[in-house]
Length: 302
Image (cartoon, rainbow, N blue to C red):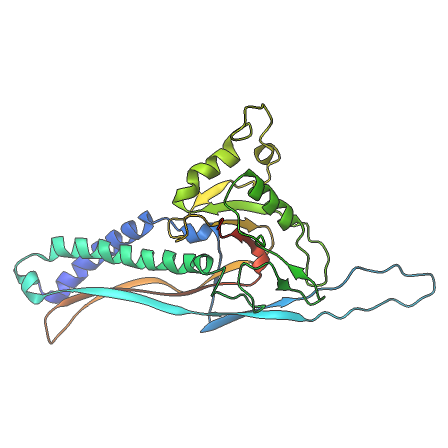
């Protein structure tokens, strides 16, 4: 007995979904090394950075307690985007029993396309962070002059870009330790991990994983490794477009954020007019930054 179209779709769907999931999962979630993921139930999200309070003064005996006023520093907005794509198998291909091989190949290609777009969107904030992508305070994500409510500034990049080497990485650790809150109080920030493009993976290995200093005949310790200055080591991000730029995540909370509005979903149906079978995938998410001090970066040397 011939299988009806509805029965065929019912039989195909679980297998295609399994293939899609396996292929999608082969692409590492490299964005997870940079972004904290949260769920969303709205069309957009807004996160407000508060200024906090200044240093607490000494209260003399019999005097009144001093009260401070907190205020909003800036607001970061995340607008979710829908990412979707699909493919169809013609009625003729179905008749010629080509649906099995075609659907398997197309499903894997669809999974690759969906995964690729997500990683490119995540990396675009870093790729454009020295120029066109602005944080909530109105300046570039990586800037030497992030303004604070107290009138000062924070720098999450060197004033002059520097290639990744021992000196520049040590200076980055020092610069991160100098981060202050919106009222000018030191927050004792520390780096967590180094994010590099493939071109810098070998440099990163030598800087972070050798016991002795790189490029010297002395037996000096590699202070970066000995001190555990970058405790989570380094990760390679294949979607960074500048071969010289390098990035550090810090322990400052609420830095880079990824909001998931609608998780990945797949579905399949038949088109009555053409007789084609269609399979599609869809998800909805956004990437952004709530506090630029969650990262430090250098665009590399000139």
